[in-house]
Length: 383
Ligand SMILES: Nc1ncnc2c1ncn2[C@@H]1O[C@H](COP(=O)(O)OP(=O)(O)OP(=O)(O)O)[C@@H](O)[C@H]1O
Ligand SMILES: C[C@@](O)(CCOP(=O)(O)OP(=O)(O)O)CC(=O)O
View 1 (tube, helix red, strand yellow):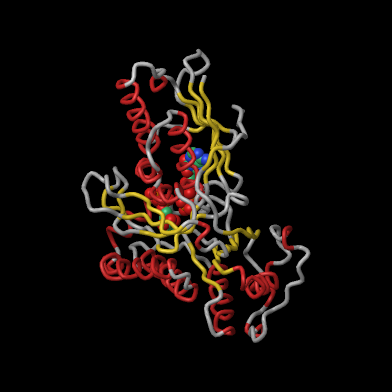
View 2: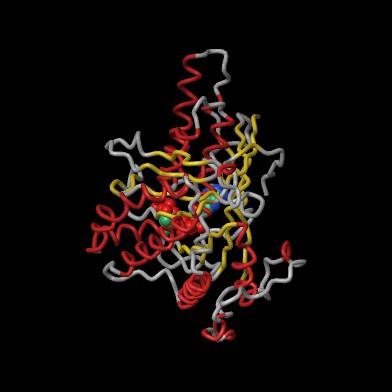
């Protein structure tokens, strides 16, 4: 029996992937950019093993304690590609054990809600692909592995790296140039923080894949976004990261979240991922930024109502000053309990009815930028 355990992070896009040009190879209609979040707070842990013993009769995935199907085309493609690489190695080197033929057992847990718009599929597929690649000792770099993870879930390709990551859409039909690359590692700009306001931890209404297909097929705005908005924005965002220009990075992040939700709304029938709570959070952040005369925080929303708010550590007292005022009673503040937050100077508190603006959020996750997948000593047992 051979076994390896790994952990992998969540990533939250600041320039959104929305739309596929090939849904079998999972190739996107635009390049995207994300921040990898710290595994201290959000992570998938996966133990992969393979054996020729009788107890390993078929490939199995245990996710959060339950047996899950591996039959989906997405999972099959990831497993198939990894096995193919391993069997090619075995064919070239007769001394290698022929483990590519053995059934795999994958035991995985997410320490945060699964399928609730918190990018569990990204961390999950990244962990699965990275773990099997280590088990098979494949000589593939993270960018090569990202092409495999991409076929599990598009956004998963970006979780192969830490720091700031781009998914280059590529132009080849076979997808061999559609892969993740690192724009900058954590050390480049370590002060990036993220506050997640969990608005809904339940399963989302319109899954990303179906939502994208609907947008591609029905939104008039979509073509404009893909052709005219994203390409220059990609370059500007990359530059803002390289120059550590938070003011610009924040503006582009918020604009791109708005643009993504605009094409969702422009789909026919329309898709609504943000709800009234999400909209109130946008207002809080806008007023905070206005009151300080600069962008101290940037909101972004994925395919659900949860908000992710990026900010710099040096402005934490301002951002958490506001968030604590409205959401300080919720779970998630333990590591900041000793700090006495107060509202930032000039914040226009009179504009906000506290009873209404405190509603709808169930918990807060305070985290920051983090590293990519890594091996761990923690071994998960079959439930
Ligand atoms: N740890 C894991 N290992 C393997 N697969 C996983 C893991 N976690 C999640 N998945 C897969 O991802 C699916 C959830 O993906 P889905 O896109 O619905 O939600 P999400 O990733 O949490 O949200 P979003 O993509 O909008 O951020 C699960 O049903 C499962 O198939
Ligand atoms: C809104 C998004 O989070 C969409 C993520 O979509 P997925 O990666 O979950 O989609 P599939 O490739 O169909 O699995 C934006 C982003 O992460 O870039």
